[in-house]
Image (cartoon, rainbow, N blue to C red; front, side):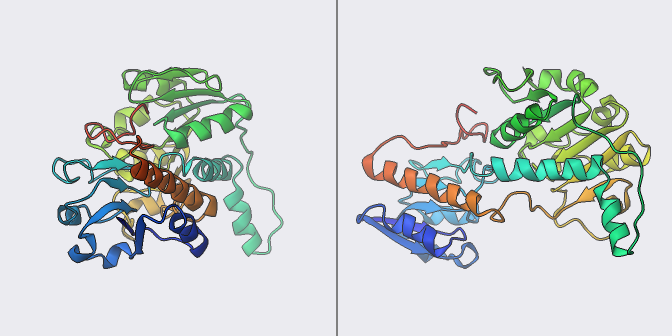
Length: 320
């Protein structure tokens, strides 16, 4: 009997997907906030994110399946028990988050927020000139599943698409250029729209600082749906106040929640949302996470290689 602990939020129909995998699985559902060390006794697989410190009590763990793509806190030495494999949910969020990014981009470019304000005042009033994405150069920094899905959509809308990833790789046909961080500043100079979905690792900390924003085209647009730690708050504030940026959309901030006294709230042409581009607000994302987890439980039973294995040195999915 394989004892499995599911700590992610899950719907009844999704429980059925897991419960019907194999009779050799004993699956228990416990909210992550309610997990105690006793719950981890004899557990061979955990589905969902858990306080990493609790994993010291999971001595029989073979599989730790995260419910997100980011692996912060789980790749430190000694956190994952020896003999266990860490997997993530890469592939679950790309569609939902890329659509959110497009929505925020066009809110900025078309000034849709101004019409919401006017509507609330019962005002029929044309506003300022708008911009178009067609023909613009888009730079995607962080070219995992989310960045790839965004790139496909922006290319389909007539944009030139450049992408930066951690390691060299084969350039997909739907983008125009694939680079590493060695070309970061050169790429920034070309881009009219800069979007980032970087994870929160040491090498991504505040990569968008004063030098980065100064390197961008005047009037560029900026979107961040990765981690707020990738952006220096003072630098993006100054870039908005000076007009260097035409607009910025931040679904993530540092810290989170963003304190009410933060000056970012009052920066011009900024759109702040409370980390809602991903998560379970789109059921298809949650379905996909469950599908990934179900596949890996089957692999566990059959002694097969897992999907979405995380490289413990880099924190990224292997081959990403």
